[in-house]
Length: 268
Image (tube, rainbow, N blue to C red):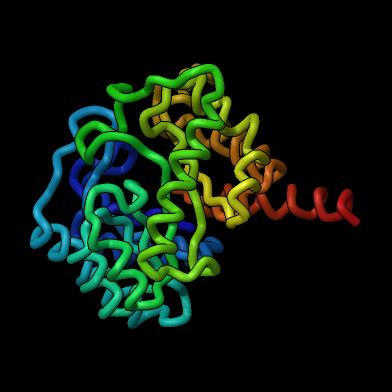
């Protein structure tokens, strides 16, 4: 899943692809590099200073990019990274197929209904807090079993979606590495990723260039975190993850294809 941030303030590439032509060109490049899905987002949840945007502004950012990408590559599924049901409804009406909600349907109770009505695919991510705080440590308080708490909270979001009519086969889960999680919490998630199989759903993972990789590898510059990202993705694959949200599609694709070949031989 290649990341297309149509924002001025995303932590890794904010502003680089803020114009419609730049974002569309970047999306097409990611497809050429091997992306199976494009994830288009118009609102940042960066660790420091994330600023919520209005529904109207978010739509102005993502819909033109969605239209460009859908016209140029109609067979590549597009995911919209949003917590707003109005944005989701408009994007789905304009060709998006997946809603990636980093709040797990917490912040807008109408989101589950919109996705159910549209028969959309959904990715429900674990987080705490709102758009401005979920990328911080403000609510990163856990007990002795960090992963168990996350599974319970994520399981509740899955049940909410199911009760609203979202088909089970349309749901994937994301443990939310780096969201309301200190480095040790993110490490626990990756180390115990196989436990998320308890929920019986495909697991998506997003570790690309994140702060915990910088802390553990010593890579202060965001662009120097690709090797750490690769290591975390490969270990996540071994732990059961099957959807990988990344900035550097070419590097991730090669590493994961290689790891999958080895793991496939082992499984055989």
